[in-house]
Length: 306
Image (tube, rainbow, N blue to C red; front, side, top):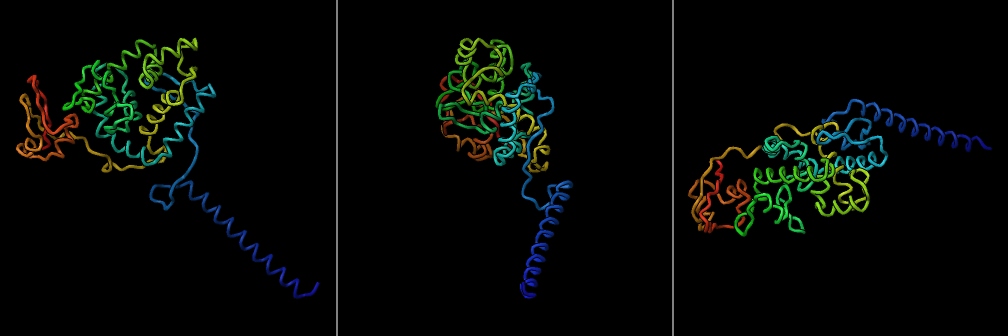
């Protein structure tokens, strides 16, 4: 082989060695920087699995994490909600606005405050409308809403009233727990309906949610509640960094006006009370039309932002 060819081969080998050394150094520096990572570092995200080797508790009921099926189902919901960034971070920002009132009412009704995560799973803490007709943060159907004292008509829909719908949800869940024996079963019944859950319990000769073979939505539902609880209570553990000032503030700066008469136009009412129609609707989303006939002379407590 000629000296010229040998020289060329040496140059190629040298170049390859330099490339290898450069790549190795970059990998090493990446591993080192990962140990001291903070939100201020210029890294788009760190993708990793979640810790399943700990106790998971919901409504004071311990999940059977020694069951591989339970572990995998919880793992799925933790991963989905950890990496569904936009939805999870918006829910996290909304917790300061809604959780204090929810916690207070749930305690007053004698049920675990963990039940508020049903509202997160149902609506992401928004006044949502489902294709089936469920409405509000707690996603009540019209019939169930009426059963638990919520007024629903063309002008008033208390499924959108935070405090009243939370109290109704607490009482409904309490009745489901009494009927089905556990909060896990109660949550499943809230999702699929008590009649459907009872049918599955009877057909499968089983009373334990974790051992039931249910439709996919309900089979995932309870695990989603658990995942949302752990993510929203420990956001930084799951990669969510929200500063205090970024949370949405509570809507608690208002005065109350008692309305017992018809209101011809809520826009005029808002103007007369020194606010806007938009603000009136934000503070009172249960006012679903732009007027109120109020033929029964019922008194409604309307909130006016200060």
